[in-house]
Length: 636
Image (cartoon, rainbow, N blue to C red; front, side, top):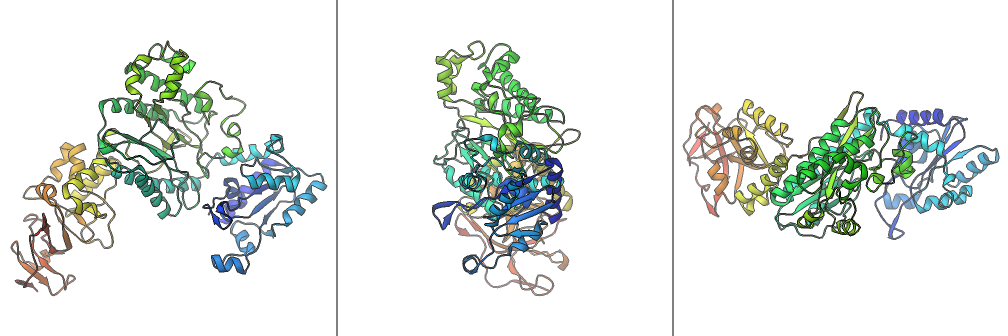
């Protein structure tokens, strides 16, 4: 939630835009899953959240324009509520959080509306999308919006859209908070995208990460190797080498703002030549469209630019032919790109579309096209500073659609049907980012999730190579990190990873607490930055160690490739003691900050670097290399 004044100011802006009457906002109710007391996770109506901010079922709000009064309707907690849910705030306490001074029981809403109607005052209502709202509007006002769409107030709809579509700095910050969690979700998805893994395992891990960060998912996760199915919510397939896994997912922030990201991931980390050809077309469409986002540009033109990029790329592959502009104008590209370039995003993942997609994405200057593909464009009007929208082009090979168009001899001047048979099992590719329209252009929101083929392959292969190198023991270790003994080198490695869009954790070895996950950095550097591989390649002067939150070992390429399991303890700095023990010496520290630590000296990093100790023991292929026995040396 924001501060109370935020909601007060929003309602005041609405009053000025609306002019007269009462604006009614119906909050959502609990929705039973299979009986009354077993409910789906509650989600408040987005418009109610925007003006009243309370994520609580059973509430309604009224904004009285002329009397400049806001009223919150809801029932007080009783002893049964307290027994089952603990102490809860009173209605007055809830109202105070959002700057409302007047509260009434839920049943009083009918009287307030009836009195206003008796005085001839206009009561503005929104189009309902839930069954309980249909019932309430009929019982309260005798309205039947399902039968008569004009029952909804266009004045209220236009006022809300004009207000909500321009996001404040605080709202953008909420979206970026959601994107931080989404980054973690994709980091896990890419690491898990290995042959033999079930889709449901990856979807479950992603949903768990979203829940652990406090906001949950913004919409059901779309994840499937059948990427040609645009909104595939089934996760029943087992991945195999050569599959492309399309993931379209996003977290909600604790303040209920959504994120929405799509990546297409090659299972095992390797794109085939055919896959990378199509992938690069979509990446170009994504980046060209993002570059075109600016105030005053219509999103329809952004969409058409992406469509032309796709058509031109498919022409180079021999799947389309003829004039690219003409092909897009006639809609031939929609065989491969049958949806729009994106939508607005905010409190709802498709922001405000419950108010009517045409009311949100179109206006008097841009009308919806009846053409297949283009008619699915959700947002077409001019972009303004403060808009947050998704850019999500895709290429899909949908066998049923191909067969239909081919049988109808549709767009034969532009589509090379004879070459599509080899793509029938291809699936689909989609790439999506969330973009803020700024006064001078655009800004891609959130921490960069790997998008180039090299970045995605490396993200998958870091896990696969690391797991293969360390074996099953490493797969059980979830908290690996890279340590650097020199701050300058630490900065260099961190910068390399950040520039590439990857997380890196290079805390100094004195860092306390649990360290977040990361696998050996040398694999990524060797894969993507061969010039920098020397930074971590093993030599006599190796300066990096890799380990988990229990300890670390020097990063030795031979060790990485051969070590199968380990149990290691902490690290001790001996430099201050002026002692240079030999490999195999067993030592205990009896004074200083490391008093009580004991173990066996393992390896010098170099004559110039700090000397470190591995505690406990290291096992190699199931055999103990070093055992603790009697202490040979005592440091004082």
